[in-house]
Image 1 (tube, rainbow, N blue to C red):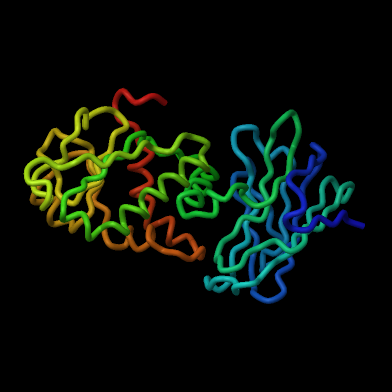
Image 2 (image 1 turned 90 degrees about the vertical axis):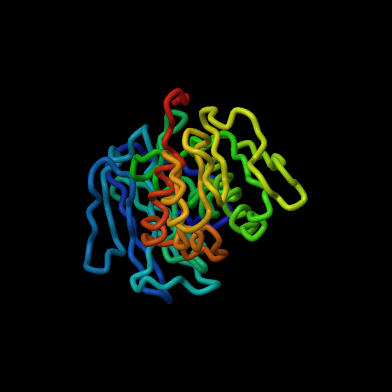
Length: 294
């Protein structure tokens, strides 16, 4: 008989470091399949519905964890109260676990367990761990970690333009701040420092440019709706692409409406299309400029 581990009642389990790991998904209401990410060798999916999978224990490397995910077969989110079960057999059922009541509510693609090497053991942990991972920034960081791509933001200092024209973008500013914070927390790095300096000129009406020193310092990003003069700060630009073409700012990133729609979403139904839309921004946020520490 398998050991029964109910969701929320366990933090980690040490597994035997020999043989193979076999997984069986039980999704009673919504058709779904397993997806194994981060394994050194390709997992073997059994059956056309891909609810059963197996891979050698040695496929879990010390460099990155293996994540076992569940993905809905239709691309629609699980219902608002839905849970699934997962059976984990190790080394020919020498050790067997029934993970009961794993929360997938409202998601299209959810992490069920993580397998990692730590403290000299092969460990199984629930989900992705940590509240930040549940945010979009944390979710993106995990997906990039699983594929071996940089997942920690290289932004160490976020300077927010406080001119009058930026007031209309307050929601987008908050969404980006949260996104970066969740990325950093999930990647295990410090959140970027946040600065809101006054603008030059007539401050009451927000006329003029951001008044701050050392904008060209490595790791500094200016969030603005009007690109500064060429050779100035590295910018993340809110606004139409036409504006950036009219006022080019080399090395900056123009976030279009599709990107902001993802950043401002309040649900948890993140999917492959979410990651595709945000990949150019993630590449830019994790890229380190010349002189940045690695």
